[in-house]
Length: 382
Image 1 (spheres, rainbow, N blue to C red):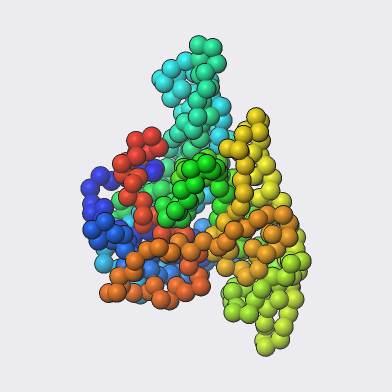
Image 2: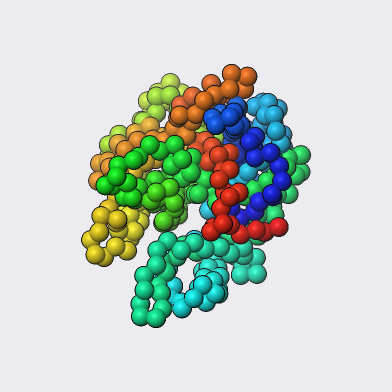
């Protein structure tokens, strides 16, 4: 949680996920001890550049207003997320003799290697494990640096649309939270075994590893849904908007060899996407092997059994089967709405349909109430 306000109604909020081409919102309210989804919706950002990672701020504000009109949200309080390019995360073993020394080392180290200057960074860290080495301790630490300029941009766009931003979170943390919070995994022997999630966005994929609901590793790789769209553009000679429609058509699917079979102008077309699938599989395997290598003793704590898929890119039918062909055991595609009650007076939920997994980050943002109580991973930026 990189920005938070301590005021506001925590029982009624909206998770607002601003992507490169679309904006998704999910409204959640608490009804007694039950958490209820009231409304959900999606709006296209006008004139968003093909394959671009960011859009014009005024176009984003316009899309937000359209979303509020169509989804009929009842509150203007929103929780938002930073995109992966505005966040620098790494995991290091830091040695210190006391808490003050660790704090100094962690905050000095967090922003090194970031794509933005240290002067623009909001810094944070969390100790995952500690072991004694003589009179000192070695801490396995998650370090986070976020661009304060990116945070301020988000806040300005929300306020320009007439919204009240109450928090800004990491996109990967929100996505993981949306399904980890609903998890019923209670095996006493393997309950602390790590689990992996591939969050496939438009411009990139985040491979995240979670243990007992806490993020222990994340790596961003430059393969996402836009790459498949670009394949269609180049293969069929169509514009970006047409390629997007082809990619998400009802009869589209990937074969085991990574060939996308689709309909275009009532004709079946075959688009070779094998290189993209190979890259995604290779980077996923490499990331998970790196995580496992951190447990050199061979402990089961480094063993990862299966991977789940989520995000808009996971809507490409057959992608899970292709990854299985590369030796990645995909356990399923996340439905972040699963297990929630739905308010009968709300709107938009029925229209989500088969695209539910694209709302993973928005649901996680809307259900971020526990972050107000967090003390070990919060850095205020205002």
